[in-house]
Every structure is written in structure tokens, then in C-alpha cells.
Length: 253
Ligand code: MF3
Ligand code: CO
Image (cartoon, rainbow, N blue to C red; front, side):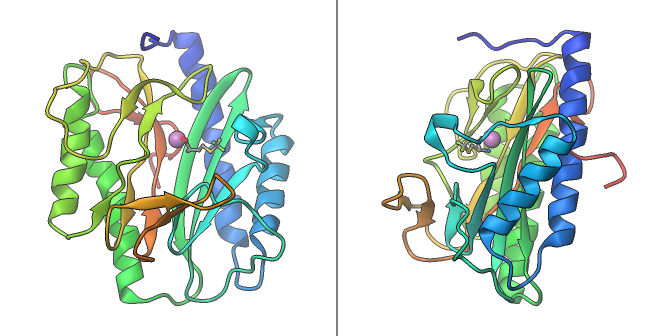
């Protein structure tokens, strides 16, 4: 499948999908507290998404049973919300969400500490977020896709963390996952040339220890092989001639 270039009208709809998703994330961030279940988080997220007339894109995607992926501590991504799974002070929690607005998708993830967390956990969360910003320095027309991947991996190498290789970022538009794939690790080839109107979900997944991961028996939850903490940070962006527009994060944030 070819990479889609969005029209002005499509970009408007994706921007709105992005604005709404940012609100969803802000509402979830405000609500997070020790003692709530990961299912509580999912329920709130789904309510907020639907209150804006959007559809939660993850729900029933390939059989995924919830609207928000909630991944705690050594869970990397795609944790399944569960009413018996209670988050507690000291945990780190990754929330991944996607919405569909008038047929157009946005996708974004954040990782939060619950109450007081260890300095090591704090640093992992900060560095993972910074990976995204290091990567998108090359997210502009004329750059090659893999400059994003290489920038993320180069940055991470200075910390000795593990970059997850089994999952990647992706194009996004009328579908949640479009071409191209966007790895967060070193690439030998240059990848496609970026053009204005491409919309991409850039999503570094970084482990405090080994890069290696496995799937739990639920066939969704991805965990680190060494039990180390993992963080995830993702935004949907628009390629322009200049700086990329981050559709799921307002300029002020
Ligand atoms: N942000 C993730 C991704 O881009 C979320 C997908 S979860 C799923 O792949 F449930 F929808 F699969
Ligand atoms: Co994504």
C-alpha cells in the first residue's frame, strides 16, 4: 500500500481527531490515582472519546477488547484493562489511545508515574518522551524516514536503555495503521522521502533494561523479558515543509 498524502480537508479532520485525543489524554492524566483499576481508566477514556462524538479505534481492533491500552511497569504496550488490576503509588502506567473522528484517526500515548516514583523510573519516562522529540527533528519534507529512526536510537544509546524492535510506529489516516512502518531503531536503508501531507504516528517504546520483549498468554500484553520498566510516548504528526505539526499535542504543552 502506498503512503497517503492528505488533502487540506483531510488534514483539518485529522487535526480535530488529534485535538480531541489530546483532551482524552488530559482527562485521563487528571483522573489517575492509586487505587483505581486499569478498567476504570478504560471506562473513563471510552466515555470521554464518545462524548466528543468519536469512536475508540482500538476497541475490537483485531479483537482487542478495550478502548485504552493500559500497560503497567514492565508491560510495554497493549496491556488489557482489568477491574482486578489496581494501580498503586510507585507504578508507571502507559496509556495508549486512538480515536476516529469523521473517518479519520489519531493515535497517541503517554507514560505517567503514580504518586512518588523512583528517580530511575522518572528518568526513563523523560528520556522516552525526549526520544520522540529527537526523532521528529527529522520529520520534515525532504528528510528520509529512517533519519527519524536513527535519531531515536542514537539518543537512546547514550543512556544504555533498550529500544523495542518488535513494534514500530506507522502512517495513519483513514486507517489506524497505514504505510510506512516507522522503526525506533537503527536502519541501514534511508527509507522513503518525507513529503508534506504525510501523517505519521511516531512512538518510541523504551525499556530500562534489555530491548527484548515477549507476549503474555492473552496474546496482547507485551512485557520486557528481564522484568525491567518500560515507557511509551506517541503523537500523531503532520509533515510540512518546515517543522512538523504535532496533531495530538497543542503548541503550548
Ligand atoms: N498505538 C498502538 C499502535 O499504534 C495501539 C494499537 S492497540 C490495538 O499500534 F488494540 F488497537 F491494537
Ligand atoms: Co500507534
